[in-house]
Image 1 (cartoon, rainbow, N blue to C red):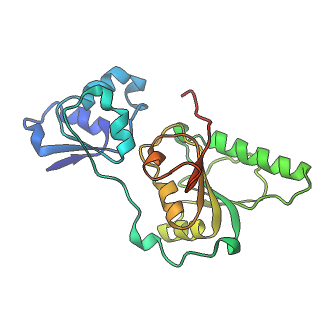
Image 2 (image 1 turned 120 degrees about the vertical axis):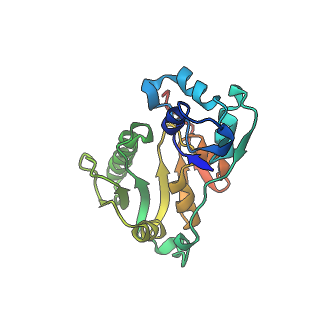
Amino acid sequence: INILTTVKQVSDAMGFLVDYKKTVYYAQHWEFWEFNNDVTRLKHIWKCGIPVVTCSNWLKEYVEDLNIDKIEVAENGVQDELVNNITDFGKREFDIVAMLSTVYWKRSDLLISILKHVQEKRKIMGLMPLKIVLFSVSKINTNYLDNASIFINPSRAKINSIYQSSRVMLVTSDLEGFCLPAAEAMSNGCVVVSTNCGGVDDFIINEVNAIITIFKSSN
């Protein structure tokens, strides 16, 4: 069985595949950024006849209006080895952890703006600044964010250590197919505060095990 993991791969495969039944599209996002945001073309590809499996129930529901005959769900998950020896919440070094990204819909601009605003407010109120830890696969300008430690392209073990050293995971994405970093952070004892970005709905219950903000980008 051929497993395709991006809508671009599906588009390419449509030109030469004879038997679609031997191929599966494992959809991990509604890839709206492909094909110059041509949503009509994106919908056409999803409906081409290649069986679809989504990474979350939320994503399956998101595309229900496409009237695809059958969509299976194979939920994403956290690697067992990344969850162990969870640090006591009160002894954690950092107040906030977040992932930076150059991908525009993950909204690092919003993330940095929020963190700067919080730090400025705390300064005005005479409070100590929050201790922040950020990680990213590449260097991103944080515009002189106060009291922040930044790790570039950390190992899986280091990311696990970062989660276990932090109290709150902040997610500011416009849209997520699943949002694995939030799930990993929760598995390591972090409280997640997230935008209403979709994929987190599979494992977050607002005000029960996390907080979903009312903010959602118009994008």
